[in-house]
Amino acid sequence: MAYETIKYEVAEQILTITLNRPDKLNAFNTAMQQELIDAFERADKDDGVRAIIVTGEGRAFCAGADLSTGADTFDRDARRGAVRRLAGQVDYSDPQVRDGGGQVTLRIFKCLKPVIAAVNGPAVGIGVTMQLAMDVRIASEAARFGFVFSQRGIVPEAASSWFLPRIVGIAQALEWCYTGRVFPAQEALAGRLVSRVVPPEQLLPTARALAKEFAAKTAPVSIALIRQMMWRMLGADDPMEAHKVDSRGIYARGRSGDVKEGVVSFLEKRPAVFKDKVSSDMPDYFPWWQDREYK
Image 1 (cartoon, rainbow, N blue to C red):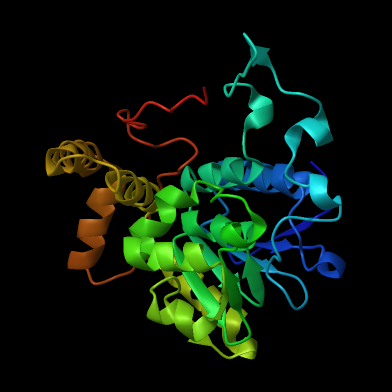
Image 2: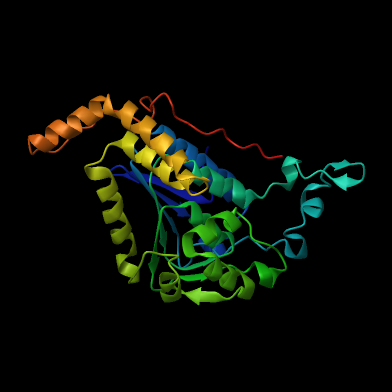
């Protein structure tokens, strides 16, 4: 896919995805939705990508949905034609009903590489909710955040009603969503939405340094498994679910060349050379979950 709304650049095993509609403050539209999904699909298949950074071009990260269509921006019937009806009732299983931002965050959720948000400026609506499925959020001092649903007369999107309370807690999530206010980076830090705030000129160097640390001395297959184990256990109903997945992982990886290399390199006091690839060497129990259908 040729990208028009994002940039896709790989250097030193780090993929930087840059939202690239600076004249629109990187506002999210259908093209950006499709291109982001494609970019994460592409990254997962590329063993040369060990970590991903997402940032924005210009002075914004993403100012939210593109509102240029005016009052009908969120009216699916008006913009795309009436969705399917059954016995006069809306058929909510119609794919036309699906939230485009949610499709992006769910794809990021499935990603097998660590994902860092480098928030360079305003991040509002989908501009902030798309970050919630990313692993680490680093903000510039110039960043601003806003869960502005209540001020638009709409509700949380991009699966943020699942992600946000798990990241910041229910009270903080509801305060930000109830008020819909736009708040500064330091408030995001205090509320645990971001892990650190840095001067603007240090944002990408800080993100790249962390991405390099993720990639430098680690086993790619282990990183892919750790990412899915941690995220998916957030929804588990009992620690036994974690114990079962841990046990499968220890057994399968314990027999791998990577683990033998990890132990021997430690004993020999030398850097490990991990050879297993995410594209071909994931263990036979992966994935251990069944993907949910939209219906």
